[in-house]
Image (cartoon, rainbow, N blue to C red; front, side, top):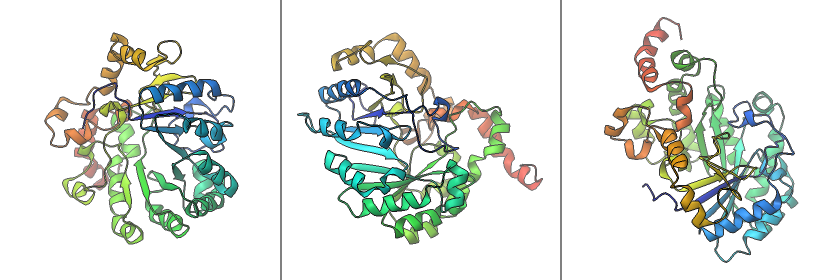
Length: 358
């Protein structure tokens, strides 16, 4: 359900661009991995004060690798001093959480939810995906979290390279204590050289969905507690696939629902953490309080940028039966192909397969 713009349920804060991995599917890799690119602690406290004033429900820390942020325990404790209660969450690759004492410190400081991003089923897949062997470290992290009073999820970006082994990755994590899982079909945030049909033939989202669907029966024998995060538009799925995924597809993102905000390491207000270069305003310059934020979102500049991002990929989206749960899919998807190209691709891909051209 759409909310009134200005009501903030969640604030995502990019703590640092520094990271101990180099994931080849990372949607922010173009920003670099500078350890010096991190938010100043006093600035971070000011954003927390703003969140408290705005009655934000959730503060979500991301990166880079946010566990590397040197003031993470301090800001968690600071959040707990605010009169307005806010739930804190963090997205991490989990490698550093192999340290049980660090896990305990973060929980004692106030972290309430942790998302651990799985990279593969074994050392080889980890190295191919991240240029680092963190497989054993992550499994130790999962064991640590499973032994502590903390809610956590293991997430996984699904690509054509790892989709066939996702059940093995889930089984290993499950056997080490993980209980709930989320999956995201890869979203290419780079400006690819190949466009439209060339891009689609190379990356084939239809095959990616089909390969995932083929794993569902096996996945359900391991765990029933899983879902798919918002990414692909509903028109990429068949009716049969949508029936199989009923109740497992997450709601649209903050761009469409207008219920969340994102701050970069430089305190820039972003449409979401994937739009790393699209500044909507800057905290401390364009606004410093919630009333000033409400004024900012009514400016022509803000409205024009967000309307452009929210523009539907096709007019026919408005009459689609899935419109209220789709909104055309993640807007970032349409950087590399158009809706018309997607329609043509779906019509021609079976012919290409038969001719072994795809």
